[in-house]
Length: 193
Image 1 (cartoon, rainbow, N blue to C red):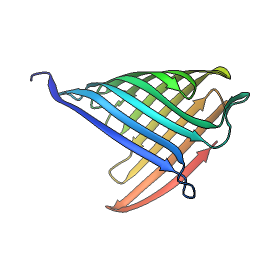
Image 2: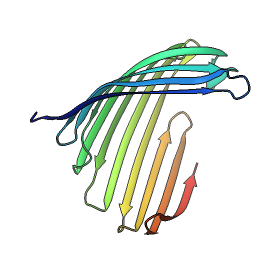
Image 3: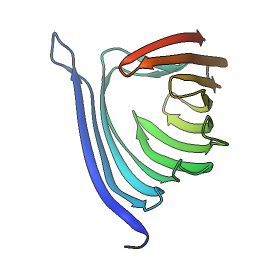
């Protein structure tokens, strides 16, 4: 095909139980129903997420918003559009909607990669989650910036700056990486918040 490189699907099931009682803590079935990729690396996909969460105690997801103890099963659906990061400028977008515990969720992800040269790269992303629960509604906004610089094949500087409105915190993870030989790595890491 002159436009389509491949079409694929896959599924992943994970399950976590308590060690002592073997009671369900969480189970997740992730199914990428379809993913279509172009010869250039751009892709479009659709997936289904089927989650089960077992809460042994009340869970305060936000101040004043409590999800009661119990077992919850919920499904969500996601549509994704991604452009290849082989270009200097590559946007991506996803939209997810569905159930969330005993309520609903609607999530938007928008990102853009910018690679001005072979040494420098930036990835700016914005996530918006609208969550509606019987105990209350809330909105989460997260802004992230990855700023990375490769000095050469042995030295790189990797940075993540992130802000989340629900905490009001600005976080930073900065790592200077040195790889003198294959299999040998040394990191100097700074974390803030």
